[in-house]
Length: 405
Image (cartoon, rainbow, N blue to C red):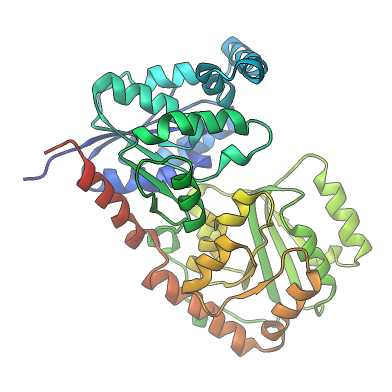
């Protein structure tokens, strides 16, 4: 007999900025479970993006507060005050408030309805999920995408949150072996399960496989992120572009960080590649893979610092693979782990633009080799690197540890 499980996913940001939360909500709702997503409200543009995201989905989403207004200033002021006091007292309540503006309101909203499972996404949401789970004597889960305790701005507060609440979790999930082992060493009561940042196959619906795409002699490099800014490896890409033939282009998708566009344009003009660099606005969550399908090589240019970025493999890398792009990645522990299933990829030492150019050169010179690498990525996504397969690990956690008999 099928038993419906009530699940509340608690996030620390808008759903449109939290693809891991969206994937989990989609999976559980598709199985017929009652899924409620609770998040803060940050801004109107993100709320509009959320509305487009949630439309037609089978789960419910609600904000801890309905809109910006007078309370926004108060929540932010409380967070600043809590952060200042935490530096003196190291109190857990202050740590929670300094990690997330409006943390108390998020906790109250999460606890407003009974669920069998409360699953926090990122450390700032952990306290709210704990509060709700204790209120209803429910099970607690935690998905850790980033090692925020290593953040110099509020790492001590996050460290205290982890120390206080990780032992209470029935399961903990993480996107890579490196992050999982770090969390386990920091006090996770159970061995964290690895849920990679792979994407659902449905996001590529309508894309033609690489062999059926037009070829015109241009090699299009692609890099995507929510923010186009410094310390993301783009300087490697600009400098490498200058070392490659003029038929190679660089296509960026994202929102410019304040002041960085002028710096990037100045650098590309100095390198004499400005006319070969193209920019596109951010697209909605469900369109990222489709938007990547017109390019050839996806660039994953993570740095070795901070350690959190070095230990993970981001959504962008797996979006490239699902879209059927060849992958060129910097040599970080997290990306080496992810590329174990994609032997046709190439890597280079972070910061070494000449090595990146040299790694790309064989694909630039040999269209057949590039086509083979693109097909290998396409095949790997459909064989193993997809959420349709990965989600079974999440379901195993809930089935094995659920309080619902």
